[in-house]
Image 1: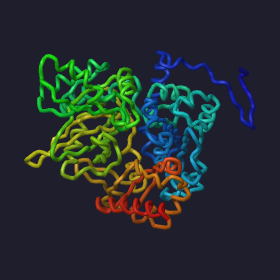
Image 2: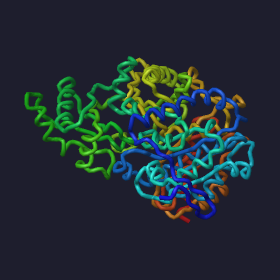
Image 3: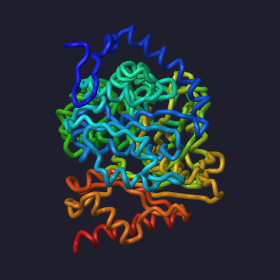
Length: 522
């Protein structure tokens, strides 16, 4: 390969030698790059007028066989378009890379939301790049396979000393990309990925002294699963259900429900439960076969834990940030809206979480965040709970999962924060805008209907404008759409409905669904 070539007026220089992915040399280079990030965070992040570049890689670097079962998965890269709101800072450049190009009308829709900045001013500081590759491979892998694209990203960064990478999740692939670009990552070193797994999470919950469902971690085989199920049944003879979870499942799609058959609790229990797995276990994702489930469970490991019963129970989550300064911030609480036969699939979220427990929930989340900080975690992450109401009216919060990545509650909250310049007070359980007003939202990633298929992004925007569904910056209320690229092919999109009360937010959500259903029957 020649060291330099010319194509379409661009100069491409062959990349210099990079250390082998996963090598000690790569880790040393990565640590050197990360070492300067703390200073950047302290001096650049607080200054809204400071020049900076944010390179956004919305790669869902997760198990691709499981992810391929998610309808319109490639369009989930659009969820991080909320970060285009960073362009409200007039000296900020944003580089956004996707597998496939994002429609201009979708980009225009986000830019029109920017407070205090014209769309044309923001456009000059936005670089959109694409791999033109809709395959199921992770976006980051696609980028690494395209050295010319890496060079375009590198050339689009005016000053690497004030640039950073932000990703959906961070794996060894994102670390390698960071090294190739010479730009630090705002997130946890993938060497610590285990801490965000189901097994690692259970260990951190114990260290934090919080409640967690009884169960067993670091399992790999069917025999391990059967032994764990038998042990739980012996402890709790009345137990009816247990949950089997892959270590690195996504939105519940790595989970399976197990229903105990009516068997005597004797010396043969473990053997009989092993034989019953095919009949009594049901993967949550409808397209994940039993064979695929056990194959993935064996490769990534997993857990078995009790299914928590309760007459009144909810599924809240706490979102945290560990800063490069090692400070911990509780940025939000949500009540998760779950679907599926056993409530294992993430559908959407209500913000903030219920006022009867959101402050105690945040306190439990902080205990876990303190443990993760000591283990070296960095950036945004979420902790999922099951909360069960007690007879005296109090709540018990059982931690069930850590997501050391951005998730389904990240983009709705960031949109609200960027548009209202407010903050969440975890001690009061309230979100207050810059104008001292309370705000709430109802958000979903999974608004879906067969009749929505064929609607283009332009159609959706026309409908929203005609029916007054657009977000109103003056009132700081209204509807924001995401996953719009999935609408025409998959009949699927996402909503964030912001209101001055929980009831107002839910009413906007219901109104939007009614209007979309009506428009699709014309």
